[in-house]
Image 1 (cartoon, rainbow, N blue to C red):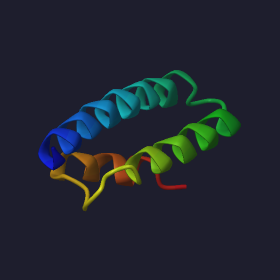
Image 2 (cartoon, rainbow, N blue to C red):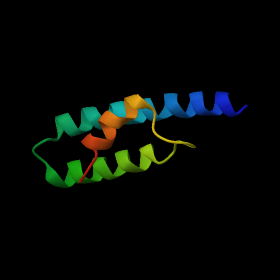
Image 3 (tube, rainbow, N blue to C red):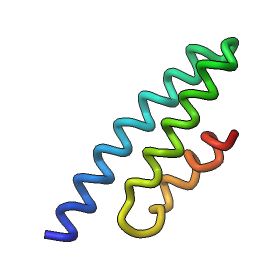
Image 4 (cartoon, rainbow, N blue to C red):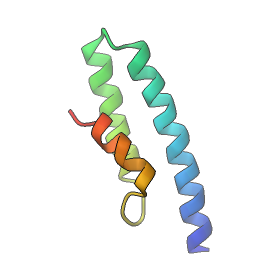
Length: 65
């Protein structure tokens, strides 16, 4: 069940960060919105049970404050 959980978590996080990335692009001229979106992105990346997969490293950098 652990592997299934990790796959489901990865799929969910990918969906969340994809939407956050769209929001950052759409609101690039609104610093307050971008700050809140980045905070949500950092939180989403904490949902992995283990370490970040390779694909998540891009988002770790993108969501830095």
